[in-house]
Picture (tube, rainbow, N blue to C red):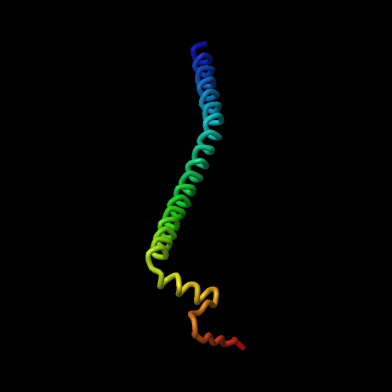
Length: 92
């Protein structure tokens, strides 16, 4: 009788252990997934912050240096000063 009781006790403990693992595993998997997503989001945020800082510096430089504004206007929009000649070369 003691042996049967002992086996039932072990079976119940095993069932509790298996049930616990089955219930905890999905939560742990979800936790790992969210942690990975959080890490990726933090990396993306840091990259976006660095890009924002770079663009702010560029904007500050443009606000403070009219020569750079003129250079960009000449390069991108083909503007020129009075009595200036622009020569364009076509690629073949």
